[in-house]
Length: 304
Image (cartoon, rainbow, N blue to C red; front, side, top):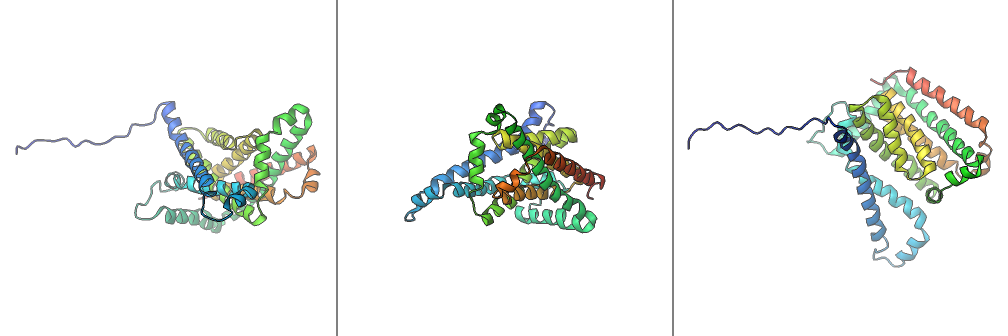
């Protein structure tokens, strides 16, 4: 066998230079998450009534609303599983995944470092303020949307969509304990991994912080699929992304998101009390308070 110089072929990855290449790289995790989540929801919707349990079809029919909420939560967990590697790469400071450890072990390690170690290192005040910011901002935005809906007949038609009413009915049909788990833990954690942990960080690789904040927030609003929640989700998405950028702590948008969801869910039953807040003065008060909290988070600098 004659000696021959054989050049080793090295696989090279072309840099993402065109707009389409960048958009594909940014949006791909969102598309994957939505496809997997939708598939999981369809599977569960078919599989649960088909279980070999006496009376299961009748039980499903009588509990369709809370069951829909549970199915949505489980499907979200299934969908986000496919993004955990991307999240660890994008959100961690090391920028790599340890192939010798499971993705869940790495996730727990990241969360421990991001939350507890940074809280101990004089960061707790900013994270606590993010919790209060979630409450005041959710009140300000919800009151603003309610006022816009009451302002005119066109406003009522615009914001009172049947899709939104259906989603709202499903969300508030679950028991309090289950709602806390679904809307106070699962939903915020999963959505922050998708929209801030992965999407925001990917956008930030190519564009400015402002662009990353706005684009990730718009995707977050679009994800909710109806006009009132689009507006609310986009506004809250901007706040969560800004807090993430100001603090460099993933815990900041998660805590903000959790507090907003929990507050709105837990106060949903007090309709008479919350109706008293639907006035312009309260919208102004909560808006100014939220701005003050945001300035505090910004003024304290970044987590190290």
